Image 1 (tube, one colour):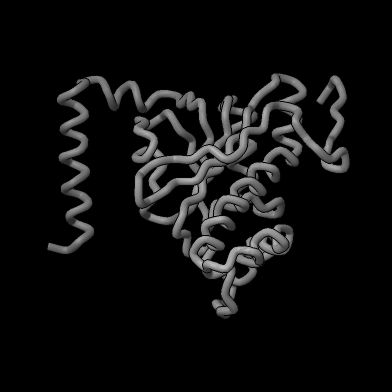
Image 2: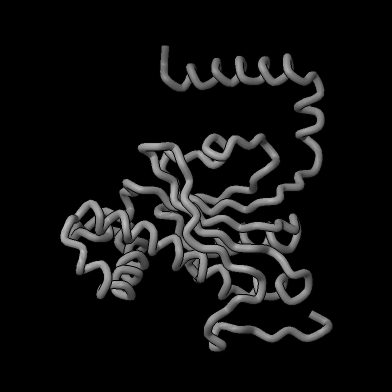
Length: 213
């Protein structure tokens, strides 16, 4: 049997299990979504948002990319962010990285991978910002692990610097931003940073909004 056919069969079994537990599951789930959370995670197949948080379909709005980056010129990410904040009215945004991230490891190397180098350049910038700390860590694995943590903190700060988030802070005092790291060896999530509404350290990143905006 082809591997993709196994996915189709697994889907049928999953759908049957859901209906056995709740006959109206799909009828209810097909209506408007009202998730409380936006999840910005890594594309790594070992870090599925719903699985590791024990949530059901409809509870988390998800965006994933290599190394869970928040890049201010990434219109895909920005579109997801604006929709989540302005339309879905999410209360929390979670940036979740993970130990053993291939994007982080590759960014620390000198490998040439073509187009992906352009994306990983942003991680190299995070390294540069924190080089004084990272270069004191002699163990390579621990240095990679620390960069994973620092990258999550930086991406959470990038969210706080966006006009979408700041406007929502100004008008509705939401969302709260969180930076988490998933440990694949234990299955546990670690909380590294929490940014409450209107918490911006540098005024240069702050926007002002009029009453009609």
